Image 1 (cartoon, helix red, strand yellow):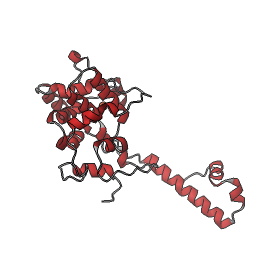
Image 2 (cartoon, protein in one colour):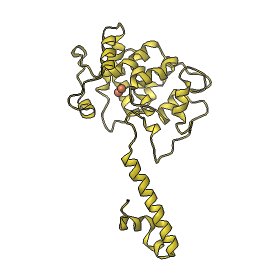
Image 3 (tube, protein in one colour):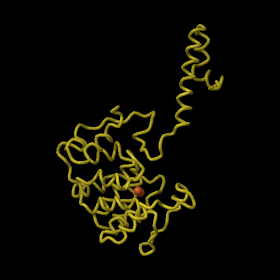
Image 4 (cartoon, protein in one colour):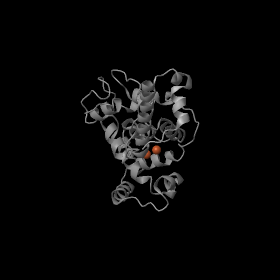
Length: 250
Ligand SMILES: [Fe+2]
Ligand SMILES: [Fe+2]
């Protein structure tokens, strides 16, 4: 049973307004107030799976409309997740003189988390696969596994953040360990490893960065479909459409 906080209820209706109501209207106002409280309590009790991205969770903020033929930049600005983190990561890659495809990989590496967070390396790779160099998506796919394993040769240490997220004694499941082993012995290892390295420099708060330095890099490294992302019949077009409009009931 929801406890009615008298003060909060009065504040929500306004004391003056309440005085003007007849008993029936008062009862109705109280009922609305209690229904709102129940909704909120339900949200708190059922926060949703932690693997779901924000686009698939309840939000009080309506999504901004997308243009008719959306580009990667539109998705980046209006839908994809971890914008600041990805910009910081790509900026580190750029300043470190890493190959342009690594800069691009860093810019894209966590964006799919708007849709889904679980196994985001795999989801992200699949989302971008039809549009970029294979090494970019290879790197994105395996950064998800390699981030759990230090590599002193490139000064990559296990991030403190993961102790907080996954707990002190977290041991990644076998499929992640196997993917990391596979990636470590692969000739493209650094495509993924450098994404994890740049990640370490990409969690600063209050850093204001824009896409401006990356616009030409995007143009050179992302094959934009003329129809707009989501409408080109590519193997991942449906993913872009769901990101553009996650509110479709079926
Ligand atoms: Fe990531
Ligand atoms: Fe990241």
